[in-house]
Image (cartoon, rainbow, N blue to C red; front, side, top):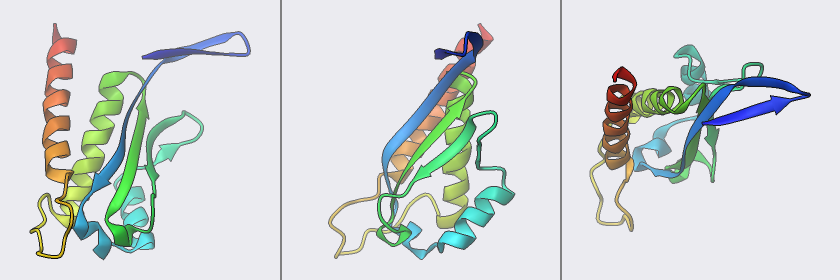
Length: 130
C-alpha cells in the first residue's frame, strides 16, 4: 500500500493490482461500445474523483483478444477484489476457457490468471480476518 500526500494533506492508503497482459481469444468477439457500456452498467469503471476503480489498457483493438487491466483501491485487498470482479465479469461475457484452434500460436492465459487471483483474494481475506 502506498500513502500519498497532496499539498501537505495526507490521504488514505492506496493499493493497486495490475495485469499487463491478459489474453483470451474470445474477447475478439466483443465490440468496444457494448463491452464498455456493460462494464459501466456493472459498476466496473474508474472514479476520477476518488481515484479508485478499474482501468483497461488497450494494447491493440479487442480483435486481438489482448488487454491489460489495472485496479486501484483503498489497499491491497480492495484492489485485488476489484480485479477479481473485473475478471469474473469478462468471464461472464466471453467464457473462462476458449478452445484452442489449430491456427492459434498462443494459449489463453485468462483461466489461469482468474484462478490465481481468486486464490490471492482468499489469502488476503484470511489475513484480514486475523
